[in-house]
Length: 438
Image (cartoon, rainbow, N blue to C red):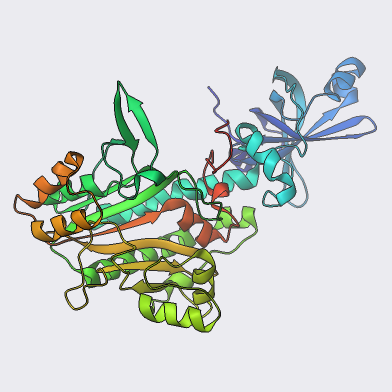
């Protein structure tokens, strides 16, 4: 088993021997000396192979080693005048040849967000995971998931595993992904909310982090067919409570990322977006947003959702994320409470990210009155669908006012790191009108 990583070599003294496993990321030849950059999961180090030491035959053989070949290196650590360490090789062994040559080389320093490389990176995503910038984004993703879980645990939430296969979609069936299971048509989950709604009447505070699936034909920079959802529900609360909770978790996330992710930011040569620290976030009603957009020449409609371009225009009004409140009932799915003061709208709010990144998450008061639930199911044409009976059952057995939020993990990463497209924030992106490969 590998015991020494490149990050450990800073502890080694001059002329101390080390055994290292890694991959060849760069190769240079200068007369009778070879210089290789060796990479592993923790970084890079230069190794030096001298012709006078290994002999002409091995020297010529090593000079042709393909990039990305896996190697075993034994050598003496040398510390240069600037403190940078390198390894003078006493033994060099190829343990895994690279026979597939890619350009640009996976670990080379190129702009992974350049459209010229998009197709290449997507086609060979399984190899380009080795790129330091892609690795940095995925490390950030892993850190972010841990930070989010920490916040939930610190605030008394129970993690609840909701199923992926479900008999009912949250939105229209045309946007859901259906599959056949032994002759039964079911769907891949669009949202864990129906199951968290059941769980919240047992545990009172629950959360779920898992995949969701959408089949809608959207090619925007914030949509994927498969993405990860951060979902939570709380018993006995209202919309103001869930808005305050979301603002708290976003501040917590950013503070923790500031503290724990600077090396990742350095690798990406970017700065963390701090706009989310400016709480409380400003608010605008859906109605006022539509009026403003019309004044700017947009064909906005009260009874329709606000488009990506319209969200971008609205974000010019603020230097932080902002809430759109009072979303029409015609736009929202059935589980959300109708505003008691205006039956045209729901007790829902969407948080729009700064810098034109669009909708980040949604919060809502969820229906607890069985009569209101049936009204909304009728309105959406679902009242006679027996598959929704388990949802009605929950509302008939001591259902209480409860609140929820749902946030796309990839959208959060994109906003915090200022990444052009959500496809760059997930290990293997599933994009509309692209074959599922690899």
